[in-house]
Image 1 (cartoon, one colour):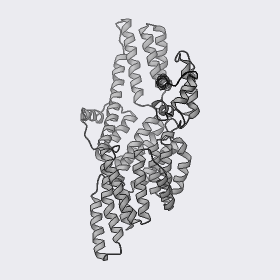
Image 2 (cartoon, helix red, strand yellow; image 1 turned 90 degrees about the horizontal axis):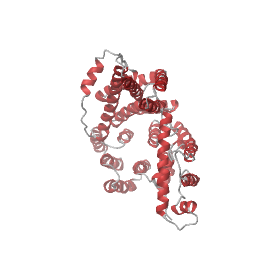
Image 3 (tube, helix red, strand yellow; image 1 turned 180 degrees about the horizontal axis):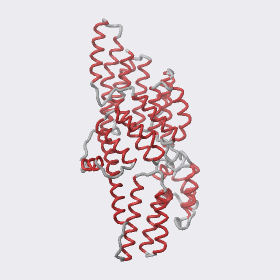
Length: 479
């Protein structure tokens, strides 16, 4: 039997929230969008297997749709393709429903093309009023104001009246504001990726833009102020810039749309992570505080979902801060918020991490040995955790074998990126001397052992591009 739980359609259906299933069903039942009754019938059959769709097969689908015919897998794929097109149409309609201003711009364009002057004026006035009433302003707000003014200018040009028209200058002004925001926001993200990927991208026209904004004779919008703060932080990496950004966020968050707050918080998180990776462990507490602030305000949730990597990172930093009870409560409260595709992997890994932090090492090792992680990201994390568990119980013989096995896994696995492979191999390179130090503790003269420890500390202080460097530094402190 041909299992289909990992097909493109099924994976995308899993992204739908509970409330979206009913809305999608309405679209399927609409003859305007869907003239194939089988698509609605197929969808009703598929959702019976939600959320995991593990038992779903091509044969079962075919029998449901074509009960009197012989099995043909290609016909099932065709029906999946039809349903997937409708799912894409549903997403377009969802986006238009959420972005009413964009939909109204499209309406204005139609009214202008049809030369329906009265309707155009009524809708234009209503849209101006709607945009003026917005308390939370983001980048698309300026783009919408530009498009509105541009449509107004185009409409006025159609009338061929030789009178002063303020819409075109207004359009250019809004376009400038949109460009400043988009350019600076995109540049900040590019600089962040350069740090992560250790690569260089050409960034043109940035210096003149910064000069314009620093000497601006016009009011700087709050969001643009935030982007300037992020840019300063990216350039100088100073603590004062970080704290200034976080203070700004705490005071202005209510004025920002969800996605803007989330993006700005991520820049703060990335700064904390960079400090931690450089050995400044004090920023673990700061990072946990950022996560907790976003959880309490709801900023971390998108469509009710929590990103699986955020779930894992919150648990990791919480346990490192010894907030075991808080982490346990967080895991139970938010585990259902992770989409099913990643939920089992992330929860099992975090459960093992929690057991290890609570001192239940044997239980953590059993869980890690029993669970098969399907995602390479969690395979790597689980291997690191298992290594640390063996270290805690001082199983040196197993650790030697396991470290070499881990190294071989890193070298041969093609799913691992070059950067990840380098960082994890560096961890193994620094871990093996630590293991030898622990084995020889008490077995060689104290002075000789301490000299080796000091030499190891000096090497570790210069370490870079190393996964779990914080744990290695902590292990040295314990020695």
